[in-house]
Length: 159
Image 1 (cartoon, rainbow, N blue to C red):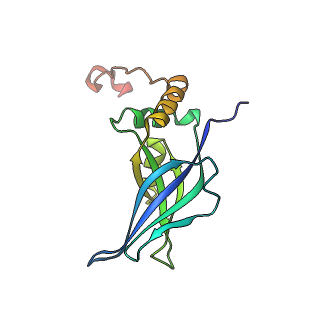
Image 2: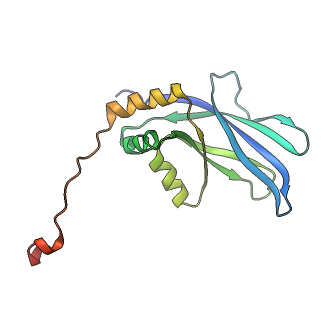
Image 3: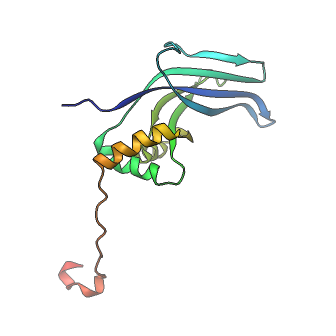
């Protein structure tokens, strides 16, 4: 059995302090970067001026799976392919957030959103897009569309 193609990535999260009168903190996924191991393993603060902070969270693996082919296809054909990043805010410390999962599957991101998780996206670089397209081309075949007969043309027992 061949292993699934995998990329190692790191996620950058920005934190703003009091961005409005209604919010204490606001978080935003800034970027997903290729991680060659030089970022280390532990999350770290890249800069913090008291109002705006940028954090790097390395060590995520994005593996491609043949059964997610439709989700990759949907992402690629959306017009603007993206990384999907699921992230969380700490219950006991609302000034702390971290990414939990990174995926390229539109369907997986939809399942996470259905589960009430926070999922943001950032644009997919051209080299990763080409890598994903090659995988999707090899492992995904859309089902042919079939015309459905209107119920009025079916026998009563088949409606």
